[in-house]
Image (cartoon, rainbow, N blue to C red; front, side, top):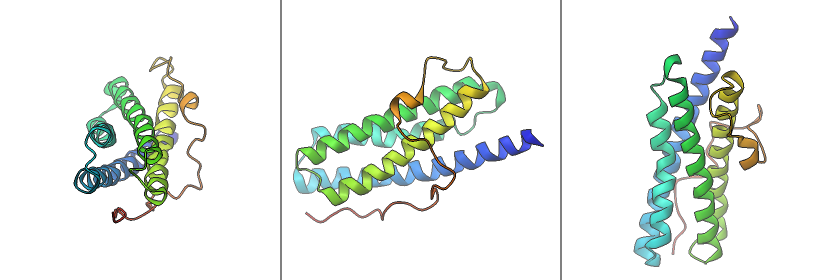
Length: 165
């Protein structure tokens, strides 16, 4: 019975992270388009596009993992986690260099931070279950707050719209 609950909980987390990472990737693509077209910014926004869309791509890649591929699944989730933390850096840099206003930044950063917490929680659960999987990786080093049971996982922090120029 516990095993079934574990599998169900993991499947639910995977479904949530797949949906949220895809939605976030769409927002990142739209932000890239807006920065390129409106602000004529190509270098920073290209970095953001690369890592911001890579989160969902890695989550999607990990989606077919079964028990014998647990290490591969954990490695791919860890890559997605690292891409999400890098995305936070580029978002902060775009805000601090006046390419991104506070409202857009706050919304995107909150969504990205939620992805970091979810991925951190998945990685931590896998690490606890399979202590040999990525022993050197400690998500608490990178993430100050883990996913809480009261989190609103199914509600995005904002719409996919970006601010007007």
